[in-house]
Image (cartoon, rainbow, N blue to C red; front, side, top):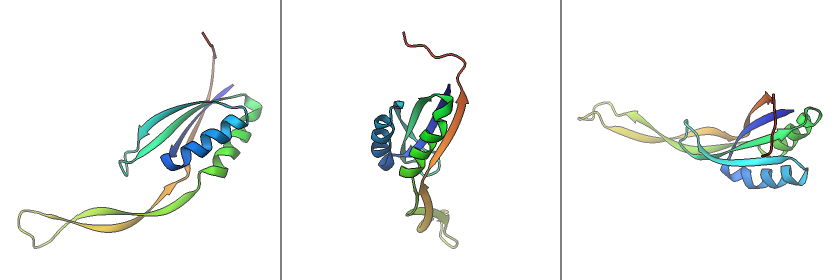
Length: 110
């Protein structure tokens, strides 16, 4: 048995959760926050039999697509007294999924 830890963007999580559950995968949803954009994301814990790992990964890949988003970055404004910062738009890639596939030594339901 494997445990897939999938970190996905909040806007993908609902559709992904439904898709995984419809395929018979057991899923636990955790609300988490990403460090880079400090935006909400979702971490899914998915228990998977060894032979179904690729099916689960395929389901994740079909929903969680990368896309571009504008965000603001702060840069030091030269010539401004007090060391002020000026925000400017930066395009970043968001979405997709970060997956960890771990061996499960023991699985119990108590």
